[in-house]
Length: 307
Ligand SMILES: [Zn+2]
Figure (tube, rainbow, N blue to C red):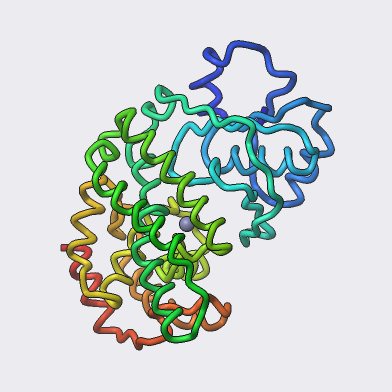
């Protein structure tokens, strides 16, 4: 069993049984995980209990050992429990390794509801990102001839519709809200598999996140920063950033820079770094390839986001 102190205390009285071994996970660094794979005893199943870190570590372990996998997400802020690869760090840089499908994903509503609400509503970031991602994918299809899968794109649109129509349940982290988030995380993974790429869910809004991490070397709640990215990139895609802000507020997604302690300078630098980041890292084609962002643009966005 791989877990962390807080989630383990939440669920240990309810799991019904004694695990062969309980290990608190400390990092997702590749070396650390490989040592764990060597150290831990022979087990039939690996159970990952907690947030992204515990679930990713359990996936990596199950993949390396070839044992079965059970995931118990205690927050739904990231979709780690719904994707087959483990997000492993190599000196802090994320790499996706392995392919493993859990035998079971256990949703413990009580545990999830006991976490701060914003950690769960952050789970909407990687779903609502379908909106900006679809725009970029279609743009690339038109401008570069990149393959575009109508069925996957339609699936992605349905995900968006369902997300928005359940905004209130999600904001209040009700059982229905949690179930919706979980099903939509699974569904986004399904449409990505169908498309054979991340395009239906990942677009230029994620480049805001990557550029920010590169500049600050700080770790953030992924979905909240992706939310800022959705706002910023929507400004350049369709100028519907106010609509998007309304939707994100209705889902309780904390997407404004001050919500997670990002300063004016940090924000401006990130907005101005996005295009460069995309080109340097040979990222997918997106709206960033068609625009120049000025300092005034960035300042105007900051002003609106801090109003
Ligand atoms: Zn993401």
